[in-house]
Image 1 (cartoon, rainbow, N blue to C red):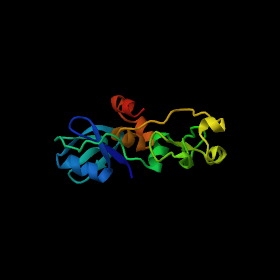
Image 2 (tube, rainbow, N blue to C red; image 1 turned 135 degrees about the vertical axis):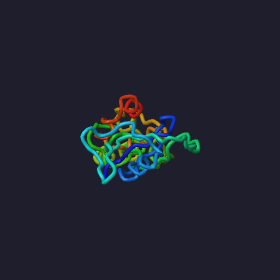
Image 3 (cartoon, rainbow, N blue to C red; image 1 turned 30 degrees about the vertical axis):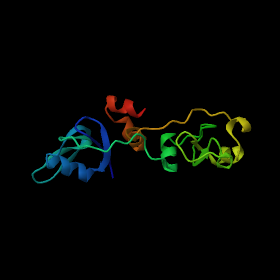
Image 4 (cartoon, helix red, strand yellow; image 1 turned 45 degrees about the vertical axis):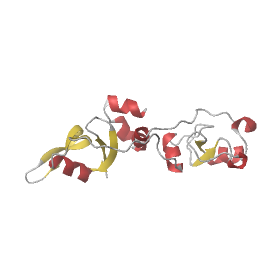
Length: 168
């Protein structure tokens, strides 16, 4: 099922919803279509709409302030786009930069995506001790960044340029 990006009235990304939910929000005049799929349409007896890719709510929704996205293994893989931080191949595991055996914890800045081979080779050493430099530095994504990164790559590339730039 296609995911539709929902923007607040202030154009801030809020979440993604199913196509059905997006159509209902538009039909109830709670949202407007900001971007649609060029060739796809939703048709019914009295309805003919373009299939929404991005919708914007008509009224501002107050969202509790959240400084950073909650940490998760899946979130680390998505943040790093499933690329190993040591060799650049497809990553399937999460590695601790400072191993848990040396006091490192589960945090955005201490974990990176890793392929199983490099994770095993590094073992319980730091990248410096193992002689395996990181190709990129881990960072803490904002909640909006995390949500945009969680969209499939093909869907991200089809977003408006001003919004896709925020996800890059």
